[in-house]
Figure 1: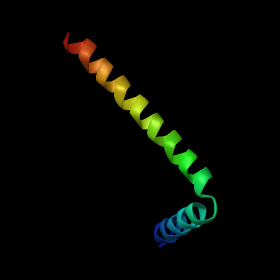
Figure 2: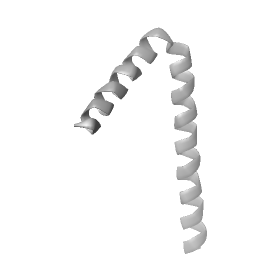
Figure 3: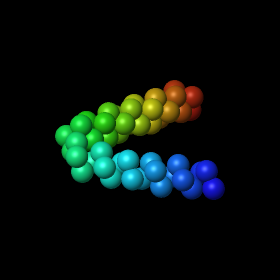
Figure 4: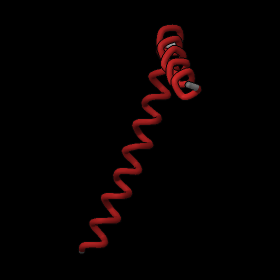
Length: 52
């Protein structure tokens, strides 16, 4: 039950954040996307070095 409340609360906050602070929300998502790309690049480099 608590998990469901936090999930819906998080979704509501996300919609509110995007609606009222779109440029800040875009910056946050750009930052998260960049971090995910850096992690993926690191894994790719690791496996390339491991095989080669």
